[in-house]
Image (cartoon, rainbow, N blue to C red; front, side):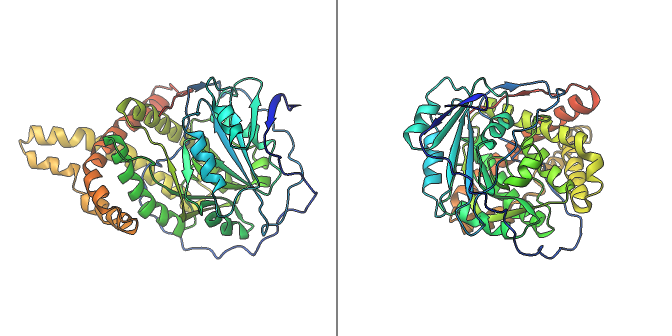
Length: 414
């Protein structure tokens, strides 16, 4: 049928509104003390599968008004949106992992963003709702917003089309929304495949970030980002923010910081685990890191004034930005120059001087997953990936802040 300018292939019925009232939860959870901690550059800033470009200076059209939401929190009240462009090879695994959830969603909506492969057919064969816009939306955010128009449940889950969930992932996120102040919640992220040097580097990076930094951020009530590959949102609040924005290359960072500035809370639930496919070659990793780095800098430029009013978040972002610029410059430039000029090769130990600080949380996280051998074998790849990370972030800072050359093109593959 024709609807909202697009085509709906309805293989499974969307939940229909019964005019039920919005969920009213428990009182706001107690606050946490404020301290400053060191954070790293977020390693999940939106995941995209094809080249998307657009003019971010153009005004955003408001979404179609959302209809009444369904059911109280005690019911099955979750709709999943999967934005997909040419994802025939991976979308089936994503859908099957959602259908196997201990708390299955009320609806799974695949937004087939004018794919040229069999993405839509694969999804329809699995009995989910497939919607297809009349033309390509131009971005992951655009595809998600197109799907958001069809959501009629109090909670919305965004899942990338290359990401599978642990069987209880949705169930683990739901309790966070018993607190009405919570607008979003995210989980623990680990690579689906750990084979190439780049996947191994990312495996250690995620183990470190989500075992240590993300838990520390959660302790102080300010997770730096609600991960774009898997997050749950309160639909009413998501609609009030016009969904996901196209104005930066990191729509999940943009949305997370916007929620904080509006007075909402975001939670990190480490028990809710997801497994995205990570870049397995340097070329693909470079595309992802380029987008992540530029997206983070763009969000700092966009939100810095608003961040000043969010005490802990402003400290986290400031330290992350300092660490990713000054520390990266020392790492890439100063250490080798000093080692050469002073004829002191031992200075290069600085490249791995923080290895114990990295290894402790990594091995602790790996032990809980019974993956000690995999972690130990992957540690050298982490230091290689960290060097590549530093190069891309410094290039992004120079381009966005010094040269005024803002990156406007999404480019991602796997």
